[in-house]
Amino acid sequence: MTLADTAAELRHLHDAPELLQVVNVWDVVSARAIAALPETRAIATASHSIAATFGYPDGEQIPVDLMLDMVGRIASAVDVPVSADLEAGYGDPGETVRRAIGLGIAGANLEDELKPLGEAVAAVEAAMAAADAEGVPLALNARTDAFLRGRDRPRATNIADAVERGRAYLEAGATCVFVPGNFGEDVIAELVAGIGDRRVSLIGLPDIPAPARLRELGVARLSYGPYTQRVMLGALQDLASDLYGGGVLPRDIRQLN
Image (cartoon, rainbow, N blue to C red; front, side, top):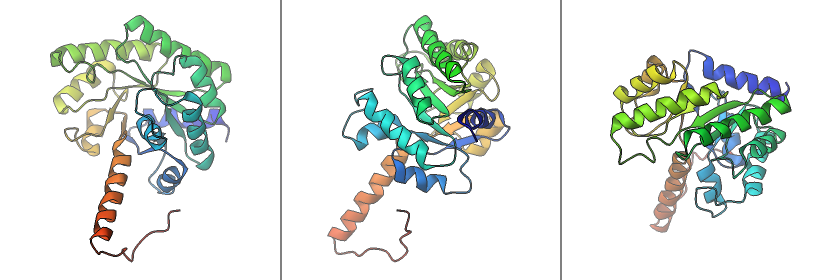
């Protein structure tokens, strides 16, 4: 299967009636562990988690070469489509997407940082133009930070902004629109109504409904960002505390590495 075929498959997974759940990974061993599950249809990298792996804070502080090297290693290590979190494009969305595709990436996240709409749309257009030039139908998960950066605004303002931006990103070629935030069914229903059925992507946070309900609401995709790594680190820290307290390793350790 060519990368173009893999990207087309990933786009189809966003369009299919079933909710696409992507568990975020940050290195080769975490990617292989998730890809080995029969339920896994695709995986996504988490930029926050990759940056933390190398000791960098989130927010494009990690050198782009280092980030791309890791997402390329992940793509080479698994047989399922990989969507890479490319933050805001590291200063050049088109070139960053072009390089990611060269490393085997079939999809990407691109965030708008709530920049002026024209500038944000231009970034999506540059990403899709780069993908078209490479002959790959990239599955672009265009992220709007309407809620993340609009915490002091009325909820109705954030919904309207997310809908306006989401429609513009879809028009520019995005596959779906990622609206991260911790909100309930009422907001999700308005986002789906405004942006489109099977066109909204969310992150699994405490107030987000269960996957089965998200499917009923018309959501296309659910991811988990840095929280998967945080769960793993919490388990590691808990194990260490237990060992320091006189405990022993459990007997049922799975050999996943």
